[in-house]
Image (cartoon, rainbow, N blue to C red; front, top):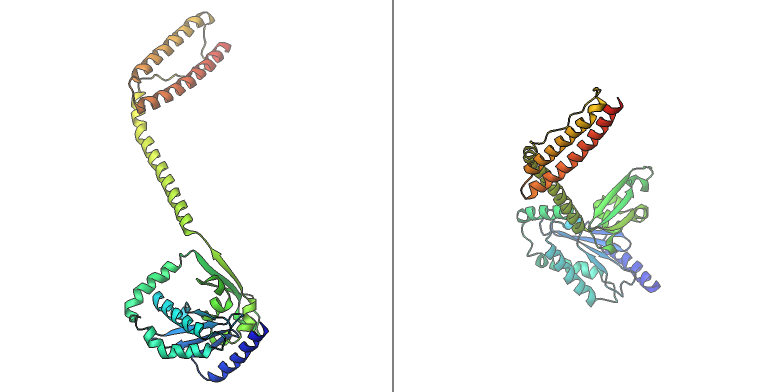
Length: 315
């Protein structure tokens, strides 16, 4: 491990001396390097990022082309460049290879991006991909302080960076550095330890299923309510022949005639019951629902009748 570290430090010095003054080359951190290919604004321009692992150069470095500046490239083009670059890295394991990989890309960039269409052709597709990326199941969220914390100033504001990357790239170098200015990139070693990055996963399919079920339940309840609204006038017509009981308050009742009065009430209740039975004769859902409601109303009326009769007797 110590030998790999020493070789990395030596290669870093060599790279900085070779690319000194080259604006296309960028050292993002001691182990992350960028190189831009193609003319600025060209649909075939892209940035290659090489990250050294702990075992580099005895292991293949990580190659990342899913940078913010490469969003205009088709995904298959990015995958193709990454695949070819990793093949070159496999052939150079055990020796410093970053300069070799960058120069190989410089010689073959036109050929690797030959299938990339013009900018006017892919504008609509890029907009669609950008909108779709907002609803992906995974993301890396980094919360960083204000850029002024690495200078003489002090600030309490924090900024949120969100990007869709692999879990291994969920860090300050992979999410935050591509979006900041050049001055802050030069101070990445001081700024990145202040950032908090978290890899988040969600299941959008479960969310969709829950929302669909909720909509279905609400729709069924709405239909059921509309059905009852339409059913109510029919039930009211079928119950039209039932005579409602009227409350008797503070009436002088002859106790001697109470038996006859009670008999009249019972006869009246029997007539109502027979009338309701005749009205509800038949079959079907309407009859069952109407019978249940009539039964409940008769019970309520009978309770009221008993209460008011007893009250009249006491008076």
